[in-house]
Image 1 (cartoon, rainbow, N blue to C red):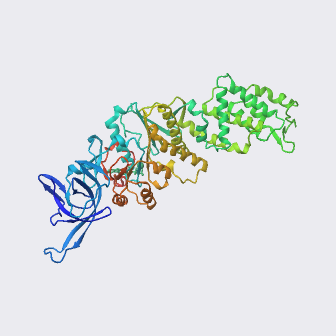
Image 2 (tube, rainbow, N blue to C red):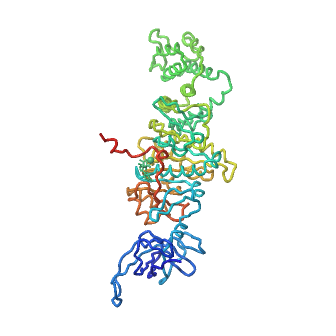
Image 3 (cartoon, rainbow, N blue to C red):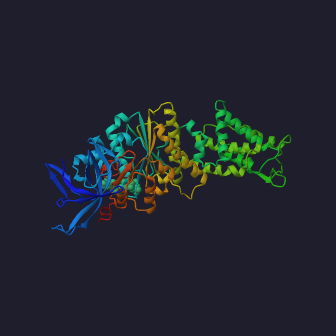
Length: 590
Ligand SMILES: Nc1ncnc2c1ncn2[C@@H]1O[C@H](COP(=O)(O)OP(=O)(O)OP(=O)(O)O)[C@@H](O)[C@H]1O
Ligand SMILES: [Mg+2]
């Protein structure tokens, strides 16, 4: 049984008005030993309508004048309610199906009943408590972790802590049963999760701390076949669609075709150089490319010879400044035979790294394409420059040979990486993991494995606006993540994104997120976006967002019956992400 507190006096649309009895002003009430919360904003009220009990939330209250003839106090308290669900045979259902009628009686709800609304299925998944009721909240993990999750909020509002809390709770409860069936990858832009966070046990956690400044010895492993892929190169070197991608494709397919032929790279280099220097319609750029190739393979003699060549632009051929010998192509190749032939034939490429091989192959390929008149030098040259420029940092963060070992959790920290690698790696990881995961589960329905990609500070890679990069590259970047967020669910591939500026993130991505954890957000544009993308957010919770305290978030989405405002419990010191505020008291103490 329960305490009656008032009667319904008006129902307009879904707004219910209840006039309260005189004695219902207490903060807490006890009835037959049970505790009840009094009537104030955001509290739950039960309205009996026949056999159904309608649950409503208090939206506001005010005083109204009494009719003259009544004596005693001259004001009466009225509260506005909004229904959120109903009990049918002591089972709670969310949504508005029934509305009360005038004169229906309203009752207080005891803690047990309120708890039932927010689900008490699994007590082990407690991540915090409901702000108002101070009831522990246990998350419905089975329906939460198979969705895309978004965590949003201003800087310092507690996003990283919330992410950590969510996944730490998951790992603490399910470590053994997850192992081997699911894989979690954290893309960690600021190195917040490289310590004991999430999982303390290194048998289950693999950390790659990628350092482009040199000095770090932790490199991300890629197998040869993953690395030698035109799409991967396209991403790494930001190749343009029409000319540079096909060029990279020729590089990769050329390598593939002669893989098993001994000395194929030596012969390829020799033949191409000979073709270039014996060409009947030489081009100025040949000398530069031959010199570059000679440099890479360490053919110093050839390099010195080429350095002495000059270009005669009127005759369009090469000549020697000292001897005036010209390089004629076709049958008149005396100069070539006299000076170059021996040097070119002597080329031997010893063992070179995969990165050097790539550099060598793009140069040879370009030379070969130019000799055949396939491409314009100016179209490909920027790509070559990018390859040159990126190789150093790539060499520091990748190790070509084996594929990564799939421990339960992989953390890829980009704290020490330069801006370029920060852009490229998440994309490469997403492409690699999405591809390999899809292959793994392609025949299973539903998928037998799941993959969870967690990206903290996702605005780094999912933003719509970025003036520093070309359109085509931006398109590619977004397309990949848009595909994952649209198609990933069917393959058991889920994203968890955290960001400070939801308004910057591509609308396609925002619109596909199932569940939201929203911390304090003050910017109007961000709030507007939430209004438009989250259908489950009610106006009361929405109005609280700009004023939420640290670690407090509105949780809403498809896995939750109704929006909840939850205060996350602080994690233990060593499990917190490395993102704490600076303590000026101790820093500036003397
Ligand atoms: N649940 C919580 N209870 C108490 N304090 C918290 C809670 N969550 C976070 N904090 C505090 O708030 C501060 C910022 O937290 P956090 O690093 O998670 O914010 P953030 O939103 O990830 O910030 P940024 O966007 O800059 O990465 C930390 O000092 C942390 O101790
Ligand atoms: Mg953070």
